Image 1 (cartoon, rainbow, N blue to C red):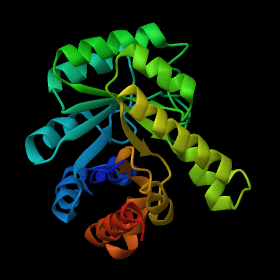
Image 2 (tube, rainbow, N blue to C red):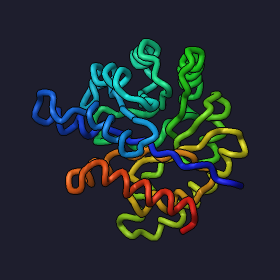
Image 3 (cartoon, rainbow, N blue to C red):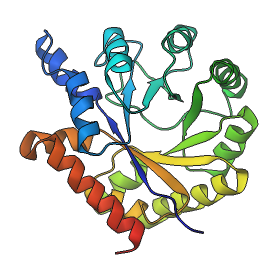
Image 4 (cartoon, helix red, strand yellow):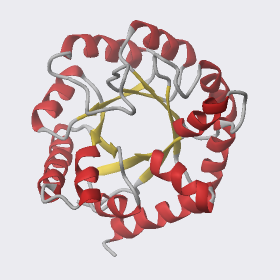
Length: 249
């Protein structure tokens, strides 16, 4: 198949993490979002957690008023978060799991066990014109459940593969094969396929070769690189890695 241009969504959560470590208003995640777009990001991702550990409600309001690219609003499928999304009207809402004590999102949504609850949130958000994606494990069963729920988009959780690559584990090829097969199944089901979690320059270049994947969402790695080279350079290098992977270079 002919691969479409691979989009880059930049997650700005950890700019807010640094701000909140000291309190006050700096560094400003909204400024980071604007800079990311200027540097080539195709969209901005922000996760408004129930505990507000990084992004805050006011950040979401300011992002909606300030950025020129789509906002991907990561959220738990709770009544409170659905109400905020309906009031805010972001371009997209990515439903993710949350555990109060986790350091970051651990694993994909339980789209099988939580099928009806997630479907209800998906129906309500879709009716309001918000494009829903589900953050899921790269498994055929999860994709079948996502199709039944009615989500037009899935984001495949790449964390297990990226961790295996980082530590040199022999499970890395098997984990990548799971992602490859899931991306192919998404295409067969007519679901748009995104991917994210733990990606760096090298893994983004590898996954960019999968033609069914049309968007990568990357945050923590880019913010870490930005400490050393600046956000525009980090995004430019990521964009180059993605483009090279897409071209098979």
